[in-house]
Length: 203
Image (cartoon, rainbow, N blue to C red; front, side, top):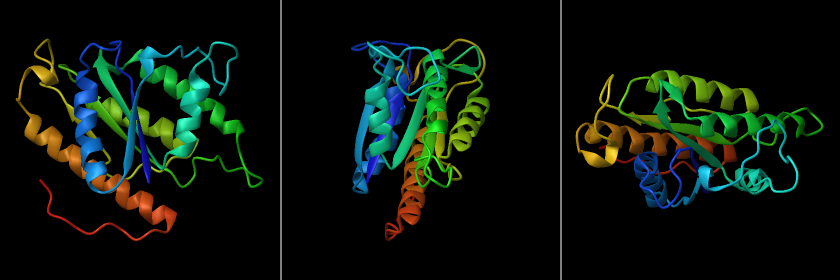
């Protein structure tokens, strides 16, 4: 199975991305369970505004679209700004709107049977709101979003250190992230008709 993580940080490479650091906790667990993973930092690409899968010459979204089609599992990873998902995450969801027109003869989008989850970071609150908003958009398009298929890290309202600056609250966020990976894989395999992975102790 393949998993694709869309890192919606506002930081261009090679700057350290706290969002990527937490997303890699999820990726590591998926890899332990035999999943091939890939992460794409969208801010490094020229993702044009729009609601179609190809906005013409110079648009880098078609390459991301192809990766989405090849993946069984999608993780949208976003920082928190002003209590909201990043503008990069919002643009990615807007571009996924083009999938609505890519249906089979029964009107189903090609994401039917694929699963998705969410990773959120930020030193301010808003994580549950972002998880809900991103999940609703993904469900609308056709992804299956399993229970507890998300993780987040923040230290409450107001300014503070970043995820990579402190170990505070990592235990919770990392454990939830590993369980999110397990839940995503369980449901992805069930939808694909494949045997479920063996149960293991969480932690």
